Length: 246
Image 1 (cartoon, rainbow, N blue to C red):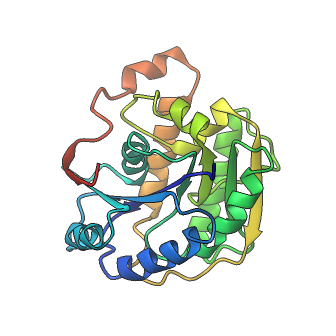
Image 2: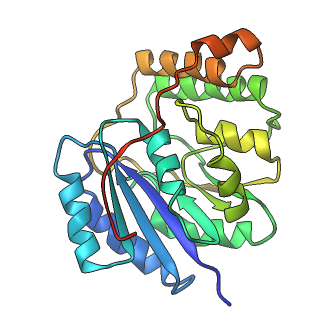
Image 3: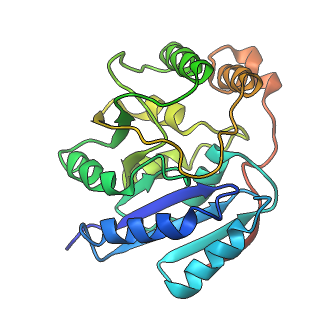
């Protein structure tokens, strides 16, 4: 029996990119399996992203649509999608076409070698100076709060086993960072290296202030000091306003 694949995509203000993203995903996934689904989670976009997702769903029932009740952030949108996946393997990638859907083939071939997760790593990140510095600091912080091996790199473009997904969704804290959760559960991690593409649509939502907030939250929610529990929110990870196709 052939493997099934679920693709989970957090969507925010990405209406202009979704048609091309959909077509390239379909063309790629059909080369691997006939059994796949694409779950798009609209993270309370300000544009008509959810309407576009619904149009794609009406066109192709392999597209599953979720709309969150407010903006919860990319990581929380992902873990929302993870709760609905059916695939043997789960792929995550961004909505702006910086990640090449065609690279899913290489990710799939690599995870079939026995890894629990494989990350797609750009050879040269086309990011601003502060984003590059932020990535380095985040990498050091991961090494501090998880048993991460120094040679392992992480990104938001990856493929994971269903077994690993089932472990991830057991994490119920309000603040979510998928790669930290992964690193606490497994060291059976692979990397593939590819050329990095410029953002095709929209602009980055990252800035220095957001990076600083991220570092603080990572330590509060994943640090080992017991006192940190006092600062952890009890809010829900996500609230769904609407969903179609499930």
